[in-house]
Image (cartoon, rainbow, N blue to C red; front, side, top):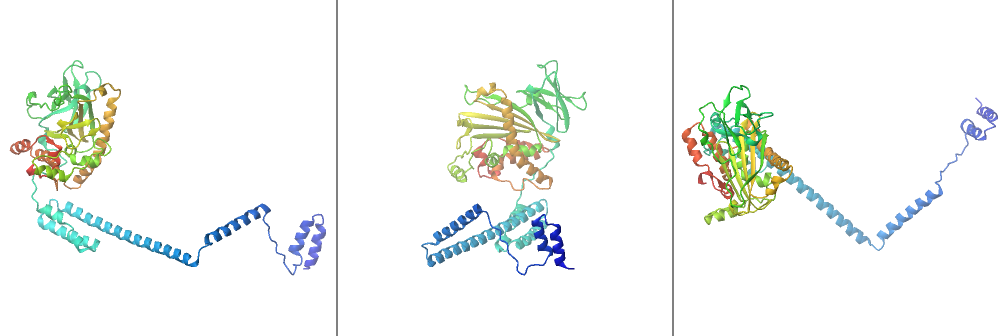
Length: 482
């Protein structure tokens, strides 16, 4: 085909559009022997901006290097290399520390497994488990010293003689129901309206008043309305006898549920709050938590123990040598059978706790009553708070809401700890495998609870129950010496 002919034909047919004719000749016609390169030129403003940037960079570089010799540059390079080398060394040190911590955690995990596995086993089985744990820990750590001490705590604990009364159990003993119990606050029971219904000790009950709101309270079975339980009111609380055994006289009901006697005659205690709360943990574990003052500076850092210091062991030992007690906090506490914890906290001024003093020496006081009743869902908690100061709070609107919010926050802090203990018990562990000296009150409660089936042992354990100050509770003295 004659390309020239095609080109001329195209040209004649497109004479009215010279630009398109030129394009046709370039594409179809004979290619020129030398191509023409087309350079796109930037608009003048952009060219000026680019030139300015180039000149500024070159001037900056020249100014940085101006006046500096090659030796100076080499010295700076050496310093930079030294810094890089130091950073590498620090990275290796951190890697080594992390590896050591991971090995320590693995060893601790093996120890924990040994402690759980050896509970309830014979000496031979415990030794076998401990030996296996040592071998596993040796693989986790290259240190012979770490390998040698993997499970000494478990072995010592296996050899240590522990009181048979000091054991944990999520089931309350059947004899525990054979007591008078405060089950509701009197102010919450009315004649008209809905009766107060709840379940404790596996017994579903309903509490009402007869005749009028001033009439006597009555506790009936919610499942069998014809069954009426012995009922008595005392100190602003409704007490009930829920056992099938013969009921003792109401005169035997203790009187410690009312606010205590005033420290100063002109400033008596006044009830500020009475709350009923359902807590989703076993009632014995909750009681032990309430009796454990040592956990407060660690657990209740956002509420009542905010700012509390950790008890000083040196001060405890020094005071013991001098024949006295170091009082880290002005708190007196006691367990009262069958299910109550009483505590009085001394305050030099509202919201501030005075360390190193007894409660009676303080100007202001807060008294608390906790009644812990076992239920199918955990614990029915009756809480009463009394103060010998801040009387104006009785007339503050919504004051009850303030106390409810405060109590809920404190219980929320406790629940994380107690629920962990309950989970451990459900998995076969023992929260009393290794008691420590500051567990005195909780130990005495647990021993009393586990002695209920034996009258002689019960009397012995009840004789040991008494009010303790913070110094007596936290002193580093074994339970047998307290």
